[in-house]
Structure formats: structure tokens, C-alpha cells
Length: 305
Image (cartoon, rainbow, N blue to C red; front, side, top):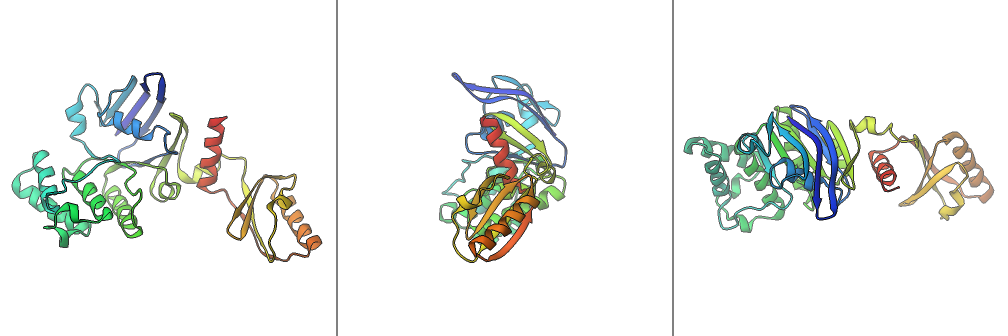
């Protein structure tokens, strides 16, 4: 559905996107994950035809977004990060307007609008002006507007950023449902948990480059830090006391400590020895596989080096 090849975007002397290439298969839920400023939104703007690339190509459903813009855009529903509703129109009129812009017949756009209002739990707000909706409801309406043309490709840029928990859960649930029905979805996010829950594959971006592309679970095998030890003690501990020679990093997480190591057996032995010599009882001790967050942070650090 998407084929990006050697895509570059420069703003004066700054290279925001640096020669990236990747493909998204039909029916796939593909995530672009990275910190703020990684180049995710610039990439989305190029592949949706909002800005022109400095070099490279973006093909959508077989159509070059620069040369066959209309045909490519007809395949897409686009929800950019800074999208907004028409605040003085009612909820249903926002949807009907989008349907009209997409060229849907009057009967079809009314049927589709009511279907989406029910799906996004907005039917009881159908006649309410959009300016009176909560932020979460507005975001649901924005996504519904992007679905009026029943797109083959749905492009979502940070769809759940800064929303309440209820709206986040509903939007994630609906993203999965539309994907299950065959809609290809390209999702950008800096939320590692969201990417891991939703995506078939993830591309991690940093400084305009792709650091890795893989399935979430397979990404966890890209690090040398195969294991971490999580421990909590009865009394307070200075984390410096836990920086054994086999430990590469120590993190304090609430009342627990996370010790990253390639030698878990040796570290467990030293944790137990420390507990005995300091007379500080161990409350819990667990070995953990690397999380997606661990992989993300390590890949980002590699790129910065």
C-alpha cells in the first residue's frame, strides 16, 4: 500500500528526513515510533502530499503522490496531528460536509455519518456544535471525518496525544477494528506502549533516519541487554550500592530498582550477598525480558552516538 524510497526533506541546511526507505503492506497496521523531532510528522506530510520531498519517492497504492496526487489521495483518510473540526457546525454536519467534499451522494453520506456517530459514541451529540465538545470527543469526530470516504489507507498522526483515558481506549479499540476489516493503517506516535499494543510492525525513527524496522516482539531481541533484574528491599537503598561490575545501568522505579545486565546469574548472587551483608531484607526479586521501551531507548542512544 505504501512504498517509500530514499525520501529526503531539507529545510534550508537542516535535513529533517534523511533518505529513509520502507514499505507498508496492504492490511498492515504499521507504526512510526520516535521521540519528538525525529522526523515522523515530516514523513507523513510528504507521503500525504502536503509538502514536497527534497528527494526520493512516495508511492501510495501504486500512485506516485507527487505525480498522481488526486488518485493517491482518493485512497487515503488523513488525520494530521494538528487537525481540527469546524467548530460552528454540529457534529453531524461536520461529517456530512466531509462526505460532500468526497463526492458521496446525499443518502450515502447521511447513512455513513450516522453509522460513524454511533461507532464513535457521538450519536447523542449529533446536533451539538463541535465547539461545545470535549477534547476527546473532538478527536473522535476528527477521526470519523477521515473515515467518511471508507479509505483503503488511514493515516493517523499522534491520534491519542493528550486525551483522557476513556477516549484513548475507544480510539485504540476502533483502530484495531478498522484494521481487522482490512483498512491499512499508518500510525505515528511517541507512545511506546501504544505502538506495542497496536502495530504489526514498527519503524523506529531518530534524527530523520530509520534505526530499525521489525515486529514489536522481535525488536526486543535487538539489544544485548537480554535481561534486567528488578529488586525491592525492606529498607531504603542508595542505588549506587547496586552498581555492580556486571550491571550496565541502574534505574529506580518507585520503590524498586531495575538492574540491566548481560549476566543475570552473577547479578542475582551479588544482590543476595548485598542483602545479607547490609541486613536489608529482599521483598521481591524478578528477572525480566527487555521491554519495548528498553529497545527504543537503546536504539535512540546508538543513533545519537
